Length: 267
Image (cartoon, rainbow, N blue to C red; front, side, top):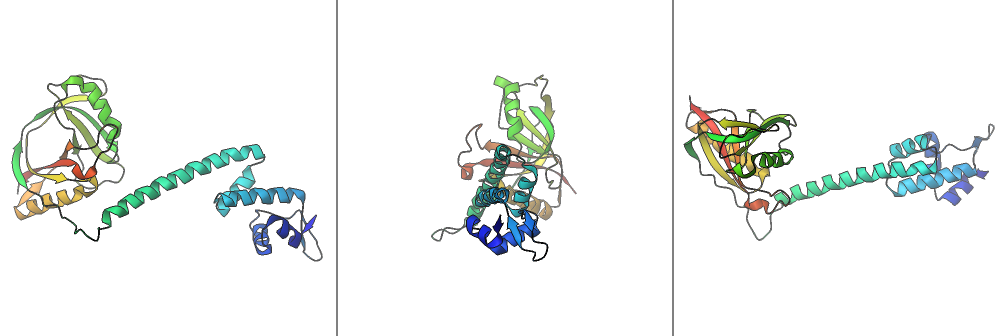
């Protein structure tokens, strides 16, 4: 058996840390002197300490270490916990990379002033268009799940850029009412998509050049115009992806071209 000072020496864990681990029921000494309260550690405690040091070096939190030690009865099971932690780390890295990418959008080069998008607004009549359509509820960035299905269903009948219809008037977090459409030369019949016609509408239109993350500015320009000209905006609004990412590569987001179409009526 090892006294706490000896155990601290052979494990490279401070006495303060060992006492904390004892209080948290992470590493409880094998026995304690009933008179003095001195802690004594065993070979099994040493093995456990080595496992704790490994988990700490892999940046497991205290709660995670406790969970592993409580449920991992055999060293061979440790692999499963390490695999789960690896997946968690990879997801955290993915989120951090996305955050860095978002930050970069707001970092202005010192030698270049920010260019603001100038939107040209038009009110025009949009003719009816025959489409293959998939209506679904979900997130705004889930278009990729359905676009391939539309192209496979349409085959050589595809006749234009994809159109996303937004049936909600407001912004919806994670449960939007969406309808992805692909213009076709004639109405198609397919078990996975609906052949239909988008109706003719009178609408306010503008084009957005650049990343989809800035599309809200195009909508602001449209709503500002509608307010100034006594027009009421209706649903569903449409986004026509004239130029965007491919099926595999995203390409240059700065060159994406999206036409925004918002149906209107005079007040």
